[in-house]
Image (cartoon, rainbow, N blue to C red; front, side, top):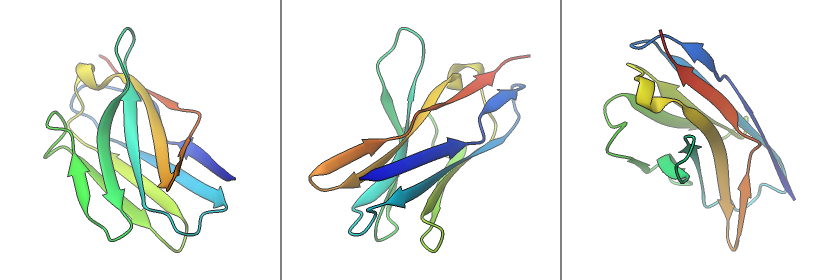
Length: 115
């Protein structure tokens, strides 16, 4: 089993920054990749950013140039640095871990961008 614990969400003004963290524990050997997804009210969950075990990254077009995903393998933690936040970034952000053929999700952390 794998446990994912997210932190770092909150309320921020437009143009501000937040950093999300996701710490993985449990059976975390052989991880294929980790990432962040988000779900806004009334919308489907969407990919925000992912990072492979080799360090390759992929971002949604809507966050390219503003968000950066990174990981600390020693701490089994993945981060999402979010800059230049916009109201449309408001959503519940979920951490995701893939260890084929299984997929695990965190409980989610709320990010609200509002003045």
